[in-house]
Image (cartoon, rainbow, N blue to C red; front, side):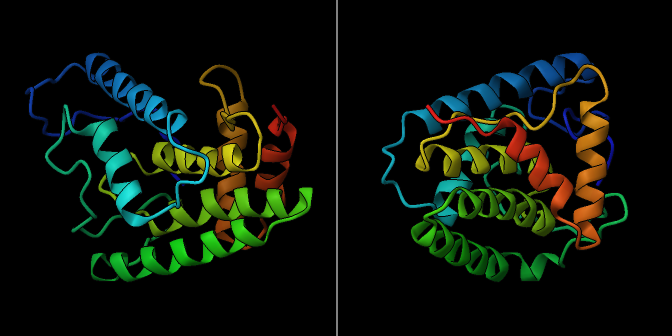
Length: 193
């Protein structure tokens, strides 16, 4: 995973022709807040779907980017992870959503909930279905699952201090098959309403 997971590291081409990184980050933060508000207003019975994820991504990023709400069409590298080729994204997302909905439907214990949340966040980011904003959208998706289970939304890390580095290290370990550090980060924040 890249170290710059909380903001856009450099200016992308954008609809507003902004070049100031801080201003771009402000627009993105406003979009993410709008997407989070949209999620909080969803009925808890709303089924997670590819269409829902496209809509969330669009709400979060459409003010700035043409690629908002569209599946990735370019090959990307995310730190040590090379996500699947763009031609595989749609099929992988349908499989992921099917698996996630099955897990959510059949989760009965606290450990099942933790496993679902870890799966939701990590596998979404691993597929990396969008050009940008995958970590942020993945955290929103994880929070949809958390809300379905009656938990408060999670942050996973904060901009200040070492928590972002710890999160990135947990994601790197998950890239290598060790999901325990990521699950532990989620477990520490998991609080019922």
